[in-house]
Amino acid sequence: MNTINQKEKHNIILEFGRRWALLFLVSEIIFFGLSARGFFSIRVLQMIFFFGTTVFLLGTAELFVIITGGIDLSVGYVMGLASIVSTKLIVAFAASGIPDAAALLLGILITLAVGLIPGLVNGLLISRLRVPPFIATFSMLGISHGVSEILIQDGAAKNLPHLANAIGNGHFFYWTQSAGLSLFSRPEVARGVKVFELVPNVVVLAFLAIGVLAFVLKRTVFGQHTYAVGGNIDAAIRSGINVGRHKMKVYMLSSFLATIGGIIYMLMYVTGKADAGAASLLDAIAAVVIGGASLYGGKGTVWRTVLGGLIIAVLETGMRLMGVPTFDKYIIVGVILISAVLIDKIFPERTYTDKEES
Image (cartoon, rainbow, N blue to C red; front, side):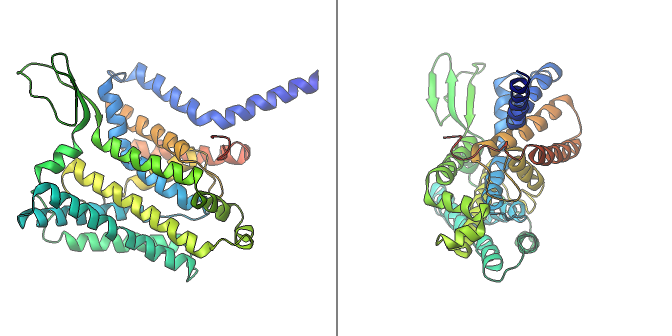
């Protein structure tokens, strides 16, 4: 009987270790719901996801790299570089007489192609020249920042087409009592008629990309190889995986996701900024670790990384509503990150595997 009780206690403690992030999120919501006026509203919910898109995307970028046992410190400034390149290109194309929609599409496509370059360089340095990931990606951080500053020496590009602002600050659904539900475009209504804006476009764009990556990690050979490389690199080599090539692809994917983040930043703020994603680097790494990924590699899932990002986004939004200085968030995120690492050490078996989430 005593043995059974001990086993039950062990299972309860283990379940707490596995579910602590979800329990922490629920605790956050209850705390800010009681402390921050207006927290329980559609507007605040949309704010959480709107301002959290950067963390969700950069967190997913870091996840793939961390699963392989690496780290990518360059994603924040690659995001900033992408925001500037896309802004400059779109403004130049629009000024040359190209229709706004075509200028926007062309600028975004070229930026996505350019955004692969930092990841390619990182991958080559790490996989071919055996440069440690910390050094390679930290160097790319500086290079990306420097190139961004050079590009904006004559001032940040302005006068983006109105379409960019309409997409970046528009919503997927609009609802009015008279006109009902409409998609994409805000309905024309009489003055004083309330229009409910539902689901920001950038949130939809971000989660489309994240959803595709969740499928890739969970259901494809590429995802299986990613786990294999981080779990046991010697076994991965013996099984025929080209580890160097796979790492190169992973760092290019990380850079590509950071580029998408930069494009979304450009759409949201209708400009580019060299350090657009710099402040989100700690948040992105914290989201991955809070989500249960191991810094030693081989473990982690996309949706639990999103859960980690959501914890940070709720924290930041709740603190804003309470009037707490934003920089205090970094202290709390640092404490949460340390706690997550300690919990991972105490409960090494707590992390959900890919199969458990199927």
